[in-house]
Amino acid sequence: MSALILALTAGAVVGLALGALGGGGSVLAVPALIYLLGFTPAAATTAGLIIVTATSLTALYARARAGQVRWKAGAAFAAAGILPAAAAGAAAARIPQAVLTVSFAAVAILAAVGMLRPADAARPSGGDVRPVKAAGAGAGLGALTGLLGVGGGFLAVPALVTVLAFEMEAAIGTSLLVITANSLASLTTRSGAASLDWAVVGPFIGAAILGARDGRRMAAKVSGPRLRRVFAVVLLAVAAFMLADAVA
Image 1: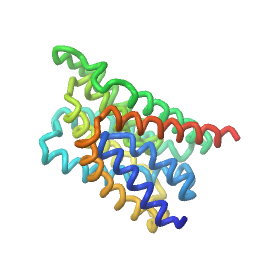
Image 2: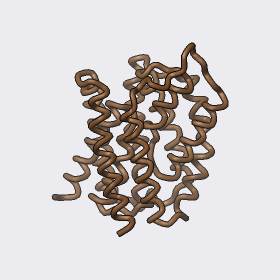
Image 3: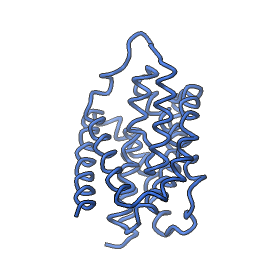
Image 4: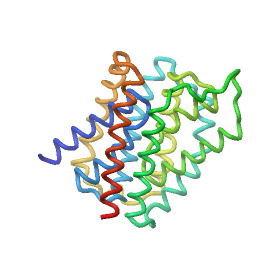
């Protein structure tokens, strides 16, 4: 199968996840770039950030038009993660590739577990918002984005629900703002973007953008819990493959 077809297929899956769930797709992008398209882990994380930024921006626009973005709260949450994202992005190039692979697999497992949990299981009652915890969650999410090239929507959505007491639709929409800000911050400190294979990355981005639109439509027709379970199973399979490859 040609690299173009693989890039289009993988991009569509990533976009579907982002559009339907507000996260999870970026965790699939990096393994797809490594194992299907031959990128090194370092190049894959940089390309993943570019893909996530472009896809999240288009999805953010659609969610904003629907009134599903809390701009002030989202900006404050994202602001806490900008410096950690930039610092982690600069440090990522110095980390051995095997360590990046194992770390990414661990994050994929965490994402899968989060998707299997009930969406509102940990929502605080009575609008109990905890600013310090929100800042800590935002900083941790930014560091994860910078280090591993994941947007972190799979963590941002439950954090916004749990810490800021957002409804699920608002959490998904606002998470896209957080993802975009963190990804851009990390990209500013990364080198090597110009040396990426844009003949692969470009079609990947295009397919992801179109997939995100279809993902939003899918979310309106298929129950959220079912979608989350399907993507959780895929993430667990990806994590198992990456761990096996890292220790082989």
